[in-house]
Image 1 (spheres, rainbow, N blue to C red):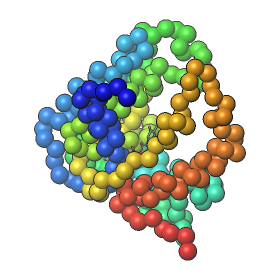
Image 2: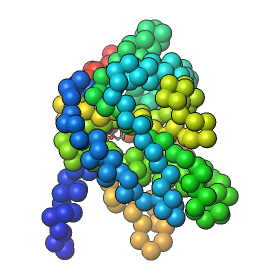
Image 3: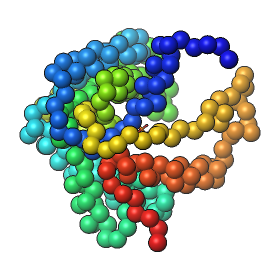
Image 4: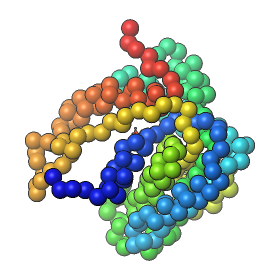
Length: 260
Ligand SMILES: Cc1cc2nc3c(=O)[nH]c(=O)nc-3n(C[C@H](O)[C@H](O)[C@H](O)COP(=O)(O)O)c2cc1C
């Protein structure tokens, strides 16, 4: 094997030790860390370099709480009930709950404590900046979007920079933007893409889980022996849940309920 560079080893180490944390300590972070993190993020790749991102750094405890409350009301509640329709073991790990679902929902909402993180970065996108990219990129369909691709790149660089500074973060998906826009006063034309709380973890480190390279890499042409049928995918999902339900619970500082 060819020797790698120390930069590669450092990068790989940061990437492999970065982890999503869903329980934060309120301890403050150094004043200029957010600026350092966003300095990394603004160098992300984007279609035609149109750089659609903007960031709102929220440190005000009252605004952070309002965001978390909106998240509980508009995201957690909705997603919780959607997940209850699936077979138990296929549900997202956060929503594999036993007993009275209403009680579990309340527990779930209360457990979400990212508003206690000392800083919350909200990633916004201005779709009009995409006028800079090739027009064809807007027409292919299949969910392709240079806007969200660019925002995802900028967001992931935030997570990486956070890890490089010895902090942790969470990817808080936004499905219903309007309540958050109202709280933050974001103009209608902008897209509210993601909430990223950052701070120190209130849970211990854990190993990540990823598919092995062998399963996902093809050489020269698509290797059909690696193609998964629909049924294979369902089997894969059962395995994935089995492997990750414990680590997900650990990231939230809760214990997994074992089957009796
Ligand atoms: C598109 C996307 C959506 C995600 N949504 C959420 C989310 O809403 N809440 C959350 O806590 N984590 C969310 N995550 C984080 C993933 O669950 C997490 O990255 C994955 O389980 C791997 O774990 P790790 O980040 O600890 O390596 C999301 C990640 C991505 C890329």
